[in-house]
Image 1 (cartoon, rainbow, N blue to C red):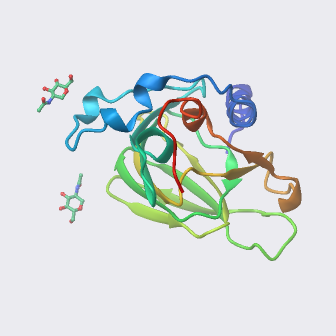
Image 2 (cartoon, rainbow, N blue to C red):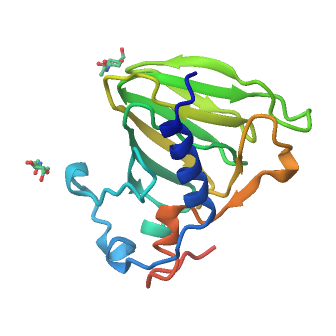
Length: 194
Ligand SMILES: *[C@@H]1O[C@H](CO)[C@@H](O)[C@H](O)[C@H]1NC(C)=O
Ligand SMILES: *[C@@H]1O[C@H](CO)[C@@H](O)[C@H](O)[C@H]1NC(C)=O
């Protein structure tokens, strides 16, 4: 993996954004009242949340729409863009709609840190899941095409722990909550009820 200055900048931006996202409320897109049965994905709010290279749509969300058990996102990563290295205790399934890339997955939680990850090639119409609490990172390693994935998580809203690198101790990983798209809904009129 060629860690160019740009990619390092993207990592830093994403990590910083995950950690210090402003809780600015945008009530209009965070309301169960605006959750019709059938919606046109092309018309759903889409934002890069200043994450540099990621375009996010919450298709069905907990804080955004009142979902209780699952949440679904549509993520589009431009060439070179990627998630931070992170883990979470919810289940997560990806469906690759377009493009290709690499899943980095460190499967052992027995060590004190994730360690060198396994690499998996992901391709159009592939699907993959992230075992609970395994540190992982999804990277658009295709220089020519966007990577578009549908992401399904359980137990929303997501609480992720972010690592600076694969050798950072699990205990030092930083809690990212709320993540940027959830932060916008925290002060919205709709309240999530347990
Ligand atoms: C969905 O939205 C797109 C973009 O506004 C529009 O071009 C398309 O016609 C819509 N589809 C339907 C079935 O309304
Ligand atoms: C994905 O695979 C399914 C099952 O074979 C197939 O029906 C579908 O057309 C495929 N989709 C794409 C975009 O290739």
